[in-house]
Image (cartoon, rainbow, N blue to C red; front, top):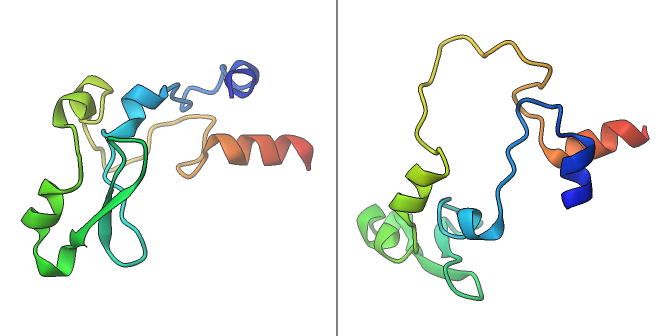
Length: 100
């Protein structure tokens, strides 16, 4: 993955996040609408959000401090920023486009 980051470092929208930053600073929902707690060595599902969002959040393993530290809070704008990246670009897309 470091090689991929190196090849695409010029992309302003590319964010280099290590596992420690990513592990608990995102909320991930599975197909059953359960948060996946990734704070340990596995993805432990919460109760479904239909049974109560607060209960599900408590079981999510979400780390608000890491979310803030990794820059998860930012100013939304009505207009997308001008960039060479489309709003849906991710590292997999960059790799695919290179090989097509």
